Length: 135
Image (cartoon, rainbow, N blue to C red; front, side, top):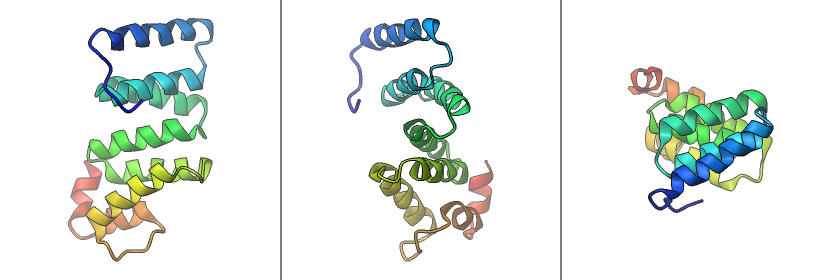
């Protein structure tokens, strides 16, 4: 899912996923698939709604947590995004992408010499970051 869908293909694919949801509207995996697909296509607001619903239905769904965390970080909601990334890593410790992404955010915001533990607390307490995290 790393490439942007062709024009028209996005709607067609999302419609197919939505048809699957008519059969089982509480299918967290399908909601996550839609959210991830929309995220990769740059439809962040639409992706967020699907990913939030997937996480509400299945709180430990690592891939939904990961993408929702990335979405929050893109919105400059760093502490919330890193909390979601940490939850994704707890749910799936093999999620190397999530670790690398979260680590890069912490290094950028808090300094490269910081240890890896307790990312959200360090991010929100770093000098000058409190205002940015709370937005």
